[in-house]
Length: 151
Image (cartoon, rainbow, N blue to C red):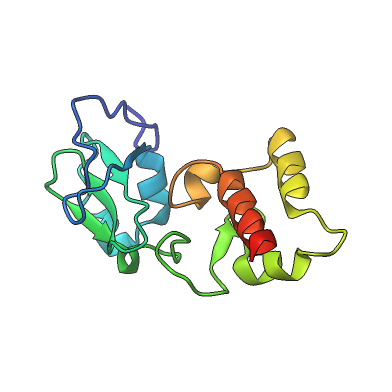
């Protein structure tokens, strides 16, 4: 098997975070391989399943499906949108949209979500390797913009 080929990550995984008890979402192994710091990457168990905890009050970012491992934001190469309220943290990891940049775009004719959607449709995104949640960030961008418009 190619060392960079995705693992099947099959098995009955526990999806409740061992730190906060909230249900998480499964992430592909490629997400962890891309975003964990080298010293931490050396500890992953490739045959295990991994889950992303989006609870902003919880320090755990990833946990293994058998609860043998947890990883915190400090274990990653990038800050995690759901865990870090800083204005400079990316909301869209593929196209460099931070909270600050989105706030500046609000109320202008710039439409970040439309721009991102066009890039996604053109096949330019790499969410599974850039975004810690391992999935498209467009939902996060839309929610952030909705919250801005309400506030």
